[in-house]
Image 1 (cartoon, rainbow, N blue to C red):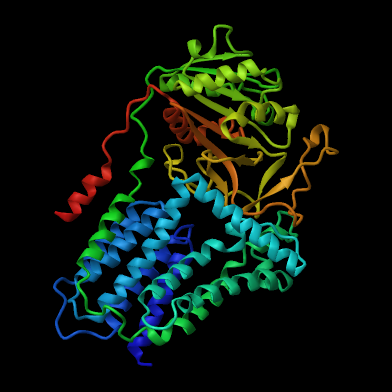
Image 2 (image 1 turned 90 degrees about the vertical axis):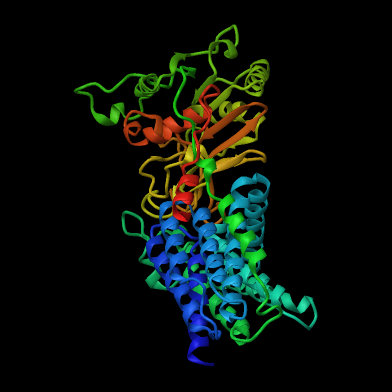
Length: 550
């Protein structure tokens, strides 16, 4: 193996490291730097052709990475990374072997990007992916004698996707032999993943256990499962090195063929995947908002001399904030007798304690179907007896509140959240600085309802009926093994007829103490719910793309 071939393998490893990190998180600047080095290594270190490139490769790479830093969402970064690889391939002559390498890298990146986008726009695809991982992990746990029911984040399934994409691309490039034999690498990767899930819990190196701890210093068993990524990545990377290294510098079918149609298709797909869907309208339009309160809610505003903890759970600032945005807000204890459609276009239900009768549910369904909007806000573990009424409000739309509290696997929600591209989540990130989730219930969704915000690094802490009174039926604050861990839905939405439904398992971000921090999220949420809001303005990314091309 020559130095050039070894450097090419290192470049492939760097690409997989970038993709395997699921293209996000607070380490993204380092990942982008490593991916950039990988581009340079692929271009410089593989065997060169006799003719020189028509265009310096660093120009499209520089433009591409400028765009990657401009858009924060992982799917967009992946689409733009595929764009960079494709542009690099177009700079090389047809008889340059490095062009084939760049095409393969673009194909792997695009497959991972399409996988992520499919999970974000299709509730059925995401449900099948998450439930499939839950079933597999539960089966592996039974065989290994461990209690485990983990989502994709806890099981490291997202980390495995780029390696499977590489196996698929390599299978398509191979010639000769049996067709079934081309998929042996994919099977070996899945077997490695299963063995890792079965063996790793019994090892638990002490170095990992000190990374995430509870506030009082004890190790949180939930955090251990999220440390599966480093060893799994190293195992999968080593396996891919063994399986694919012999062919890294060898010619393959179609080497030197014109790649313009392929690269053009990737370019078009990458541009279409830019998240113009994350834009919202230009502002409220005097829409009427009806907030349905109850005897357990306090709509007073903060007063001087009252201890902050006593006024933390009040909702008095919410109506004032919405009125400041231009909405016409009313707070009532019950629905108007003439029907909600005549009183408001947006109905907000917060922790109801009385069951709605069937006739009222039918009227709400008709209200939403005709274009109204319903926002349902609840809290954890059936506190104040609200779980039953909450589920009766939401069940017709495929959303339910669980008898649990969603808990972070570490000390707090910082860097533990995952958002799906949507107008309501525009501007949110994993830091929780603008979402301000506290302790709330997790949600169940039935497609076409889908989750918009998830506790990627969290678990479902089952409620405890014996912990009544001030305990609020909360559980033991620890992951027991049988509880679901990873990718826990916290916020969900459903399009129903011409209307919209949104449910949140926590009311913290709408309360007095959090609203100054979450106001951007709250305003964007109501702007999207507003059926009279102006349509989104022209997408700014088209102007930026045109400027770069010029």
